[in-house]
Image (cartoon, rainbow, N blue to C red; front, top):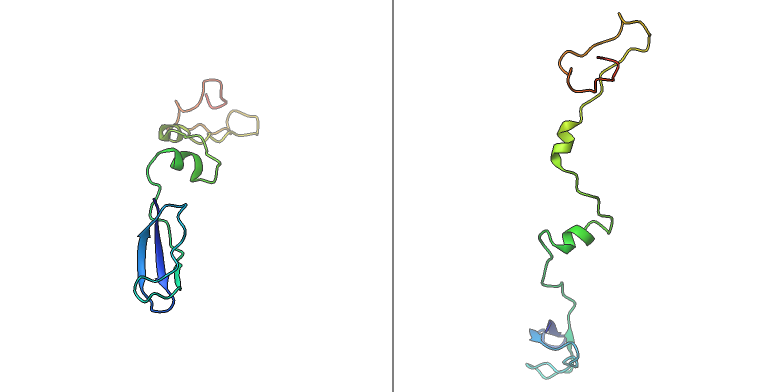
Length: 108
């Protein structure tokens, strides 16, 4: 059952009341008896946290990106520079990344 916050406009008395959603709202102030006991607009008292369905399905606005393992980022390396001049003397050969590219590339 939700808790509703009430405040009297006549005397300023405030009270939180546990009520069913189908119950009629209170009208009379329990302190002064004036018919000015009104519901107040309050923030909800819960938060959705963790890695459950909210965080994975709805938190990002409905566009969930597939998870990419962190190891996949470490494997990718920049391609070595290859000369377009056509002669073998002007091509650059990377010395530290000899095993980083495939055997069918232009640098091997």
